[in-house]
Image (cartoon, rainbow, N blue to C red; front, side):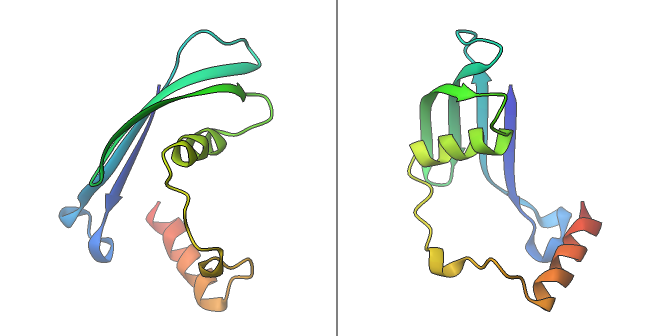
Length: 103
């Protein structure tokens, strides 16, 4: 089973963290060594969702692709491409370094 927990840490303060959501993904045991079928459930501030992803290629796709498949299934990929950037700024690079230290 895969469990993804999303928490908000205001100003990076662990003591004040708030749970935003949890996703659980489990293999339904009907697949093969190469292709998996998964059931998933998510609880968040927006409510609960459940679903199935079938035919997931375990050999060529990552765990993040599986998570993304469930997010897409549940309609959580309606972001604006204009808010995403391919070229990070110097400030982005520093924020990434700070994030790496926090992990």
